[in-house]
Image (cartoon, rainbow, N blue to C red; front, side, top):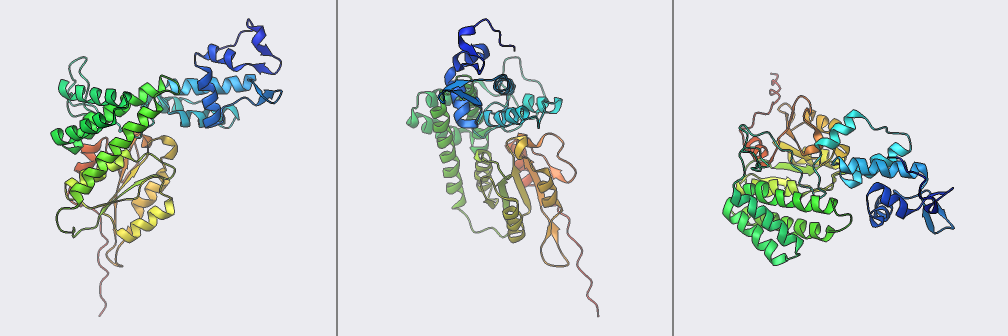
Length: 361
């Protein structure tokens, strides 16, 4: 959009004021100040050392930020892209536009790519995040009730609804059909209201994490130690969103599948060391956004052989999360949701093992 010169009192040779720019962009001045404070999207020149004056280059950068967030890119990613574009290093491309269209709108770490249902649901009926069947009206209402309790900051009600969902539907279904929709609802509310409702997002995320970890602890304390190597769960380097891995970890514990979870932002060398030490049958690598999807690392993991000399084997690599796109490459598995990841991880192990080295007489 072009900034007209009709509001001369708010424009000078040094640029336009924050209030003027906010009205032109359709955002609040508080949002512009927050973007400056959080992401460094501020004016390059401050008149008299105090007052903000936005130059044409500053305006173009913030306009790009607005365009990217409106397309669905998370604010932090949009800010990085807007600043790089302003510096002339990254131009907006059709590929980036495609990524922004397919990126869900939430910062809570719950964006699990949805598969396409095998049969189309009735118009107006929300589909399950797992893509397997339409959600029932009761389950939809549970998710909405959970989101409303979070908006009220009613922590006891949030925890009670989460516990009831797990008890009623089981962990995997409660995650995909109650927790994920509620987290998405809260994320959209946060994005559409400037800086408001951040506390709601934090409250709900904390209670969801507590529920998932409680389910893990309850399930992991039963039964003898497993005789097989554990599955390895990790976030890609630079990736901070851990809720989906917490859900997978708890669901595996319920199924008596041993797992080791390394958590957020695992450095490549630490991940490689863990694979060599654990010898996992599978590695699940989570990436929330394309900026953290390290495909060369995933390919290196897929090619890495471990075990005793003469009978080495490889781990299956599961690329989870929307950051990986749709075509990860040969030798890499791409689960679309929690149920599919569980199916792949509990399937018979078909890894390739090197034949033993012949013994010379």
